[in-house]
Length: 209
Image (cartoon, rainbow, N blue to C red; front, side):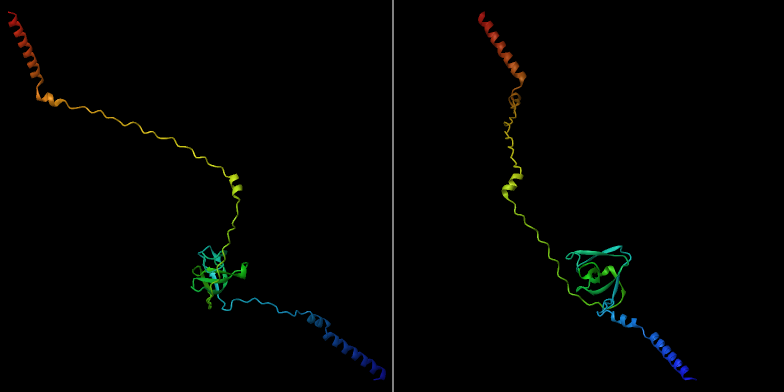
């Protein structure tokens, strides 16, 4: 092999070695690694205990509340039949479960425990009762009495007619005169008056003779 051919072979070998090195070396890798985010990527995790509950299928829907009571706390949403939700804890009396419910403050709500079944068994801690919501104050409107009187129609009392009592009712009473008639018979009186008349006529006749 001549010297010229040796130099040509050596140059070809260097060129081939440089091509192989360029093939294994990629400048895009360094640029991609420089664009990696430095912050942490959030991951979706369930509850620490991993308890999953679901509404019974025989119940079309049930209301959920902002606290463990349907009287002291407002209603914030509903659960549909068979809907599953992660559970975070149980109320102090054990009658209510705190569940994950997106779209409400804190993304938590409370459901009545007998309405749901345990899909994934786990341990639920007892949670403190949240404070009850403060009732809204009723605004007091100061009304001007003079202005109020302009819109109030006065009611004039109507005098009732006087009542005149009727005169006392006099009931006629008839005396019972049958007592005297019962003592002297009427025929005897007629006979007596007739006898006296006849006797008077006889005496008058005798005196005339």
